[in-house]
Length: 524
Image 1 (cartoon, helix red, strand yellow):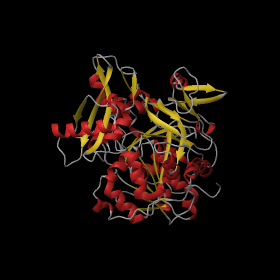
Image 2: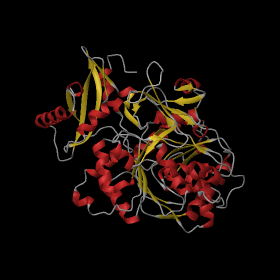
Image 3: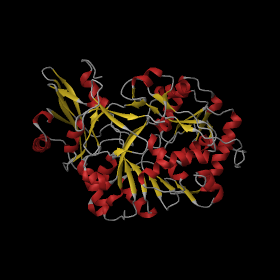
Image 4: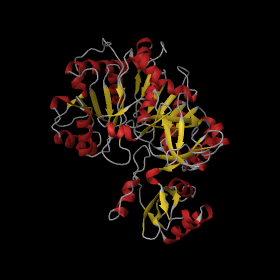
């Protein structure tokens, strides 16, 4: 590890390409480090000290990495905030995290409006408001760092990213890990070793593409790890299926961190578009974050070969991992525990489930992933169990392991439908509908039923060339009947122009489900 780390690479080989931003402007390692060092000096002079927090509301941009790298070499906590949040939600995280500085962007009008409302709501100090665009009451980032040297700062020590995770209810909580004393290159290279789980090695010609929002934990983890491993990073402003193929072809992309929704959109491109681009450079295209329908993954492996990898984890830690070859032996698995991880399946009574039997998935909390929910000991304790002197935590997923110790996920516990006493998993039903060529996206959830407790509802987004009709509804129901047991069939199908997903593919299912439960007892 002594030879790794972005800062070392930038000092030793400043002319090598570090990052290509969405406009395809090239940033060398030296140029990126120079801006990083300027921001580091400016924040320190402003009064930010080791252990303090810098919060951000930024789109995918080079500035995201400049802020990250500045915090990572100064012992600061960086708190990335989802720029789709409303003003009061941003204000809550700013206040709860105790941010000393707030670095934002007004690139999108709604983003600027939300940030202005947030700082106004809590009277965030004017001198700590920094923006990458011209925003009222904010100092521009270029003005904030102007006049500061681009030399390496003294007394460098590793910082951390503190992501806020909302779970299923209540206010989001910061997942806070203790700072690790030491040279940032050494410490951050050690954390970047997660790439080795996927057979990704340092300085081996890899090129990493980012097609998802950097405010998501794994997206920033994997792309920053690529920088610390000496790889170049190609940055997309947002996911666009054909644009990704173009960039993969042009820059000979080898690695990425993706989600199943992106696979689905890629596969739905016309063959004449898919055939225009060469994706043979791909080596390790990793996916996670949501269940991937078996047929979708099989199609991606057929297209991109054995470069498709999968893992299961959470912001809090994890997890399991599986390559394409092993997955093909056990379609649907999310893999076996990666080095240093353990998985247990526990019944509602707290006993360990037998192979093949479903239960709540618990993951071992190792020293490397140890965390506390910031200022919330109750939540921290609630989601943990001590088994044989080891600490395990859960994010509420239901699953089972087979005889060969491969983990299979059924669904989130909160999303499980209980109809007439039977457990029904929406992910299975959604997977079936996604096989239909007229379906672009789908959400399945339970709604109240006086007799059965819950009934199955499907909300479907059709492909662009399709319009909702009774005929299509009947066609989809017939298709479901051919592929699903009767108890899993939706009682009704609604059509929607666009499902409420964020840019990383996360579905806000509660926005669809909650109105049906408004006058009933809410699901827990």
